[in-house]
Length: 266
Image 1 (cartoon, rainbow, N blue to C red):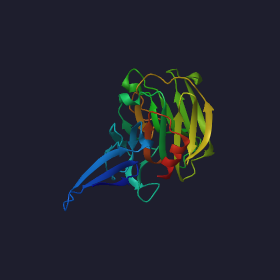
Image 2: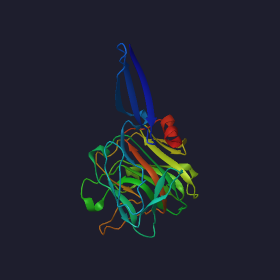
Image 3: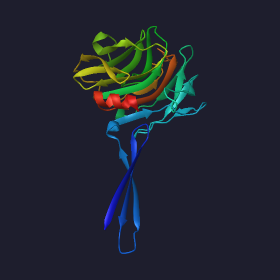
Image 4: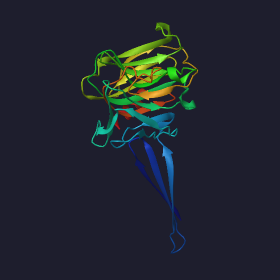
C-alpha cells in the first residue's frame, strides 16, 4: 500500500514550500520518503524584483527576494529597520532634505514590454513630484537611457507615468493620477499596471483610476531607484521623497485586479 500526504507553508511573499510524504507499506515495514519541493505562488510568476526593505538599521545593502536577486545599495541618509505597515514588517525611511535613496543596477530582465510595480508607502509630502520607485534614465550612465516608468507622488496623489521615448516633452509619456490623495501620513499599498492597452493605478488593493494607452515601451534597460528620480552629472539626487517605503515589487506582466487585491492583503 502506498499512501500520500501533503503539507503547505507559505511566507509573506507567497513562496510556498510543499512537503510530500510517501509511505510504502510492506508487511510490518512502513518506511517513509520525505521530499520538500519549492513551488512559486502564481501571484509571483513574472516577478523580477522584490525588495522587502526588511534589513536591520545600519545595513548598506537591500536584498532582492525575486529570482533575479539584484541587490540594491543604500545611499545617503536612508535609514532601515523602521516600523513597517504591519507588526511583522519594517521599512526604509527617506528624507528629501538630504540625499537619501536606494540604487539598483541595470538588469536585462527590466527591459519589459508590460509591467506591474507596487509598494507600501507612508508619507505626508504633498508638494510637487516625489519619486517612490523609478525606472527612468540615468544621465551619468550614458546611452541607452533606459526610460520605462515612474512610480511617484504628485502633489499628494499617487502617479504612475509610463515612458515611451527619450524626448523630454509631453509626447514622451502618459501619467495617470489616483483619484484618492495618498499623502496623508498613513500607510497605503500602491500599485500600477501597464498591459499595452491601458494604465491602471490601485490604492489599498482597489482599482482607483484607469486610462487607455497602447504605445510600446522603450526597448531599453533601466537603472532602478527607490526614493528618488535619478542622479545628475554631479551625482546629486532629484525629486527626493520624504517618507517610509516597504515591500517594493516589480513584475514583467500586468497583474489582474484580483492579484493586486491578494498582494494588498498579504
